[in-house]
Length: 160
Figure (cartoon, helix red, strand yellow):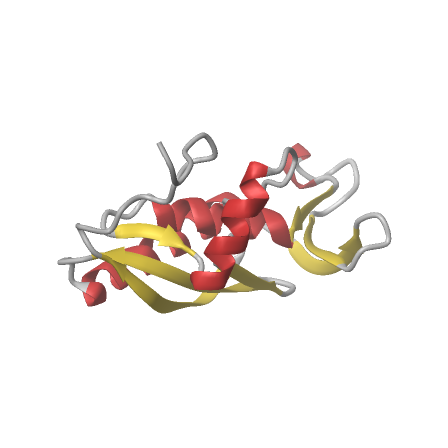
């Protein structure tokens, strides 16, 4: 196949970038290669975030302040962003790099969990986008202890 991946800009005046998969054109080219497919950076970040969260031993993604702001943002209608919290990606012409900030459960092997996260993220991103993942950098920012209370939900107050 002769797919080319190029970096393109997008969005409504924002600095959004994406990758475009370009196929061969013309009547003799197979149907699946005619045209261009564009994959935004945000799509790669969502795929990586979902794949990381699927791994047993991962409690959440995002460093302390990112989690705090993310929890506030989730309570605002339309705030969203929870899937990509703690995920940064760089997407080039044919390759992608992923940086993850994670919180692991107490008692798990951090080395094993990190290896499982790398495997799952690389597999998901490469399978779904066709981009080659050159690296997945993982920063373990915290360990969730069994006796730590869950964050209070929006309906729960301090006083009962």
